Length: 170
Length: 192
Image (tube, rainbow over all chains, first blue to last red; front, side, top):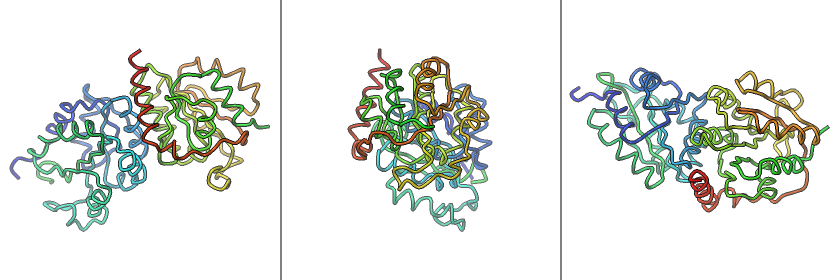
C-alpha cells in the first residue's frame, strides 16, 4: 500500500489536538503502534482501566474540566460500553473521543464487509447512535485528526476513529 | 446496627459543605435535598459509573477535592474501578459507599453478596490508602474530619438504611441545566 498509516502520524495528530489523557485497554491492533508509544511518551498521561465503560465515564468527567482525553480500545470494548456511550454521547452530547481497533478484520476489507460479526456491526451502530466517525486507513487519513477532535470539543459531541490496522496489515 | 442514610449524609455535608460530590441513585436524591449545590455532579448516567466519573474529575482537577457517594449495587457493577482508582491513586478522591444491601430504587431487591461482601477489604487490596466501615452515626461523625484530612484515595463503607424520604427527581439529574451549572461552577472554582 502506498501512504500506509502509522502510529506516529496518529500520535502527532493527537498531540496537535491537545489530547492530554489517554484512557485505554490494550488492543492487539493498536498496542504496538499506539499504546506502547503512549506509555513511553511524555506528551500524554496514560490511564489504564479495567473495563472500557470506565473509560467512557472518565473521559466524560474530564470534559467538564476542559481536559481533552482519548479512549483507546478494541471494538469489543466499544460494544461492551454501548450504554455508557449512549448516555454520555447521545443523551448528554459530551465530547467523548474514542479510537477503536477493529481486531479480526480481513485485509483490504471495509468494516461493513467483514465476515466478523463484531467488526461488521460497528459502523451501523455508530450510524444508529448518530455518532460521527472516521475510518483511518491511509496516512493521509490521519491529517484530519486534529480538526475532527477540535470540532468535537468545540461543538460538544462524541467522535470515533476506527482503525483496521497499520502499514501493510491494513 | 445501621445508620439512617440521610443522617449520615447530613454529617458529611457539615464537614464537606462546598466541594465536588458525585452522588448516585438514592444517595443522589438524598444529597440533592441535604446539600443542594452547583458542584453536585448528578449526571453519571449509566448505573455503576459514579466512581469512574469521579476519577475523571479527580485526575482533571488535582487541586479540587472529589467525593463520590456510591451505592453497593452500583459499585458491584463497576468493581474494576476500585483497581483503576487504586492504580491511579488520586490524593483528592474520597469514595463513600452507602451500603444498604439492596437495589433501593429498583424494587428493593437484595444485591448479590448482601451479607458477605466486604468492600473495605476489596478497596485496600485494590490500592486505596485506607478503608473504613461505619455502622454507627456517632463513630462516623467522630472519624470523618480525620478521614477528609487524609490524602486519598480513601474508601468508606456506610452501613445504612433508608431515612427521611427525598423525592426521586430524575428530571433534574438528567437535565442539561444541571450539567451546565456544574461545568460553570467548576470553571469558577478553578479560577479562584
